[in-house]
Amino acid sequence: MARTVVIGGGAAGIAAARTLHDAGHDVLLVEASDRLGGRAHSLPLASLIPREGGGPDWTPAFAGEHVDAGCGWLHSAQRNPWTSIAEATGFTVDRSDANWRTQWRDLGFSPEDQASSSVAYQAWNTRAVAALEGADRPLSDFIDAHDKWRPKIDAISGYANGANLTQVSLHDWAAYEDASTDDNWTVRQGYGTLVASHAAGLNIRLSTPVTRIDHSGRHLKLDTTAGTIEADHVIVCVPTTVLARSQIVFDPPLPDKHAAAADLPLGLADKVFLHVDRPEWTTNAHLIGDPYSACTASHRLSPFGWPIVESFFGGDCADMLEDGDAAQFAIDELVGLLGSDWHKRFTPLATTRWRHERYISGSYSHALVGCAGQRAVLAASVDGRIHFAGEACHAFDFSTAHGAYETGVTAARAVIGEASTIA
Image 1: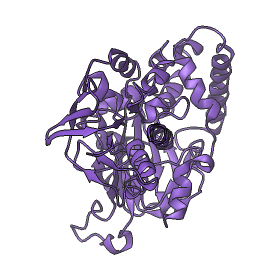
Image 2: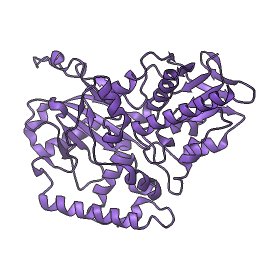
Image 3: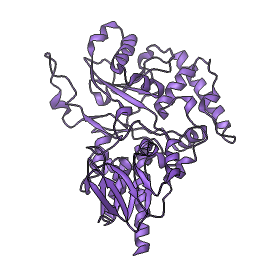
Image 4: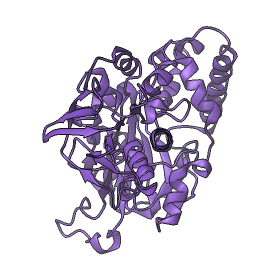
């Protein structure tokens, strides 16, 4: 019998299992899908670059390089534990500026309007912070619906929260903003590659979804598609969508957990990757497709000097485009800024559809208005035997891989402490 079973092979589950394993505990990590990483998922770049039609063969140049379909930024990088893990294990951390506030060559966004939008954003932020002592409210309360820069701020909320201003809790947003820092770095070999590599040497079962946890007896019994597993402790590290939809049933029931998960839904952020012939910009340049629209992409130009564009959509815009042609939308935005002769220079490589990823169904959590306190409810242990971890359980680093990591470590340490007390 495995003393501890960790359910979910994303950043939280890997961190929990790694901590237990390294402390000498008997631990089994079970993952519903056929891969590790969860929402941290890297794609080999060489396999995406087209090599037909007489174009250059980029395979040798990009062997071992990856793009991130999911989380790609080491947010709050100097205090992010994945940064030190990356550096200790031979990964390349790029400390270049993200350039999110810079419009390459001011295309489609004059310096005057850039300054005006920045003032509007700061004014919105100031009004929101001033309201923190009161009741929780949606972020949309702090800017007029007819403000010229409301669409741009909505787009930013889509990128940051996976949801638009009307859907996001002021109190939840502020908890993240107060703790975050502006150092956003990247991993050349892929954040998802880094997260998955941290599971090396662990006892893992892939393609093993857990459907029921019976905690009525002395031992916990986990029903899976491969049979029943018994354990002394369980750490549940699954997206809130899995719990909200009762894809894991607890016996006896734990209605507070399902309710908390429903109050912490996963927003949506999707990406399009494009190959570009003869890029003219500097490495890691940036463009906002349409700064006057709430539905627009944030285009990352030639990360690491590669001939690609990574276009990022969030919130309602990502939701709308997930069943449409997001790649064509991204190309149209870029051509609108760069000129019609660029149209033939872009080739779609890959498009994410996180809402349709089985066992995930979204990107990262945000609290509904009035529900910021549900993060603590979701994170609370049950009977000292069932623990919960994942980005949605973190009080302020939610929506990040480092928040997931820290909750996984915290849950593992709780198990270690309980086991020591019993022994």
